[in-house]
Image (tube, rainbow, N blue to C red; front, side):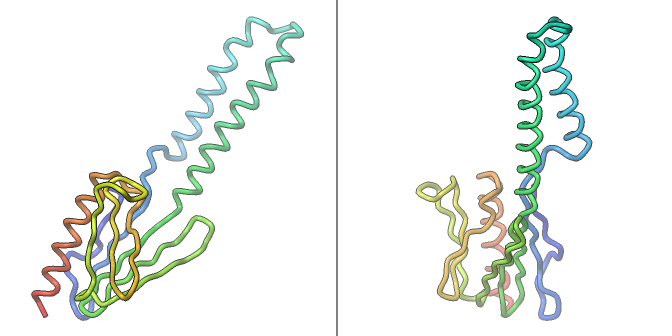
Length: 167
């Protein structure tokens, strides 16, 4: 799953920290291999028209297709630099969201009054996960798969429950 807890339980001195990030299925080597394979597959039909004027008519489209794929994958990588960090301590819960463009947003509340909401339908995504507290409601892990949001919601509810019982 594209999230992990750095500490299992929160304490007064050491809060738990949850890091979330978008799933990336393609690493740098995979990116290079995919672009190379795409260029090769698009170049194979050009061998039939080598030495003819048709080659010069088709070549711009092949180059545009490879460049478009490269741009789309690079854009996807840039968008995947998004991270969310949830910090859960005995007296404070906070979320810090670092956007791909460098913008940082944050939210914090008292964990005793924070509630976890999972909306199966009607949200921007299926199984829309939000936290409310401190007068605001914020989304968490919108980039996760629906099953991952369900598991995360259960985990957060359990951790908040244990934290409240330890007080």
